[in-house]
Amino acid sequence: MRIAVTRPEEDAGPLRARLEALGHDVTVTPLLAIKPRDNVTIPSLPWQAVAVTSANGIRALPEAHGLASIRTLTVGPQSLKAALAAGLAAEAHGGDVNGLAAFIRNELDPAQGPILYLSGAETAGDLEAQLKEAGFACHRIVLYDAVPAQALGEIGDAIRNGQIDAVMLYSPRSAKIWRGLVEAEILGTQAAEIQHLCLSRNVAAVLPEAWKKVVATSPDEAAMLALLDQTR
Image (cartoon, rainbow, N blue to C red; front, side, top):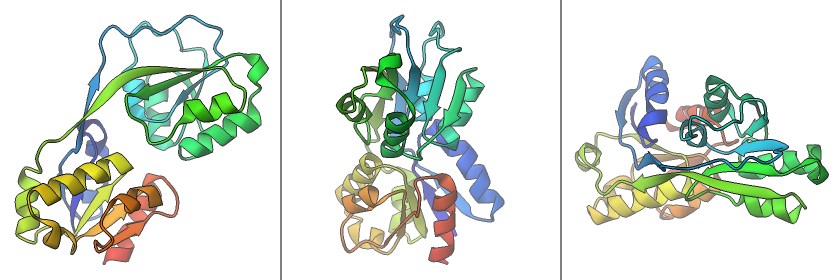
């Protein structure tokens, strides 16, 4: 199968290798470029836990972050792997922002200290608001910007020539960028014939109703890969 991977460069490599090992022909076309912010400092507070919803939030940490001994809560395998590689005391819960918020509400006590939330400038869900509503002191630190692609590049030619069977979309924002670029290059008719593999219903909802799409049963890479069997 000919698959377009839209993840940022930092995340696309391992996914590409996994797909190619399964026999697929992969084209990487990042829709977002991750740009860490300069001169970010982490406040020295008695943090109860660190919450991270993306591996990029770990990669963009300043070197002298002082968080190695603090319990770090991530959303899934990829962010967990990045956190462990960075030397953090990490564990994964929830699968997505809402699941992580539920875990914190159920397992942690607001009286035990504030939560440090590491994020990008734009997020798929409002973890900070959910935790504050539950009575937690939550401090959000923006560590990076995700800059959208301005053109489809070689993948546009592949779509035009009918050389893409499926595209993997992991967030509503990336789906919005994908749709915008496809429509800007007047490729909507061709894109409607491509199977769009969506991490969640919120991702699928961004796409035109007429476009082919399937939604993962859970918000993780294993479920995304399982969707490939539905497109054969």
